[in-house]
Structure formats: C-alpha cells, structure tokens
Image 1: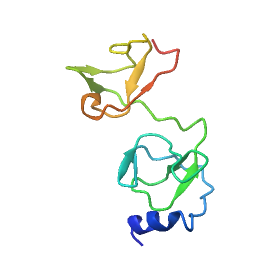
Image 2 (image 1 turned 90 degrees about the vertical axis):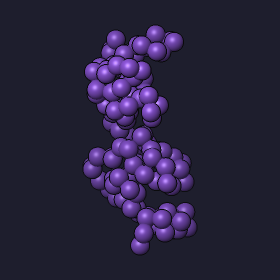
Image 3 (image 1 turned 30 degrees about the horizontal axis):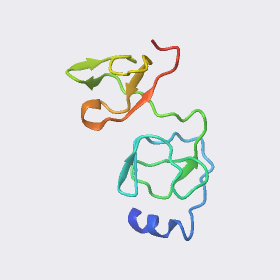
Image 4 (image 1 turned 180 degrees about the horizontal axis):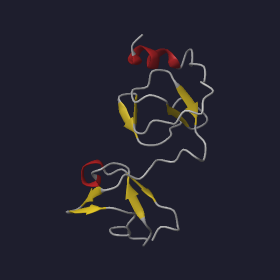
Length: 115
C-alpha cells in the first residue's frame, strides 16, 4: 500500500503503535509536508515517524526527542558552527534545524546553557 493510501485510511484505522526505542527520523514527510519535530496531527499526543516518508511506523515522542541542531548552518552570509544569539531580538541562543536557515527558516531555541 502506498504511503498516500496509508495516510488516507489512517484516521479510520490508525496503525498500531510500534513499541520501539528506535529514534525518530527528523525531518520526516507526512501529509506532503516536511516536519522537523514531533507533531500531533490526528493524535492527542505528539508523535514521530520512524521512516523519512511516513509508512505507518511511528511512536509517541518523549522529552528525549527534541529536534536536533544542524551545524554548520547558513545564516545571512555566514556559516554558523554553534548556537548563536545573532538575529534573535530576545538575546537568546538559537540554531537552525536545517543546513540553510536562509532558505528553510526552521529553527529552535538552544538550551539556556548555550550562550
């Protein structure tokens, strides 16, 4: 069955959760959209795909499943190799979730311990 057909019937017959310690795959494709972190689409709880293209294999997310920073990443005309405060008006550190922030605009705030 194609991933598209799986997705169409998933709300009628949700796939059984795979009890797994497998890592979430980020980013992953679900609903013709690229997701860079856990999602709650068709669920009361955040979940992630275990495959790049969602094929019905998934698991619930935990606190250990945050999206990961990608280093180095392009920001403006520079290559950034660590969390940065550049461009963040709240003076907090952040990082890109892809290798090109300029193009993708996907980011997350870094831990308060990263300056």
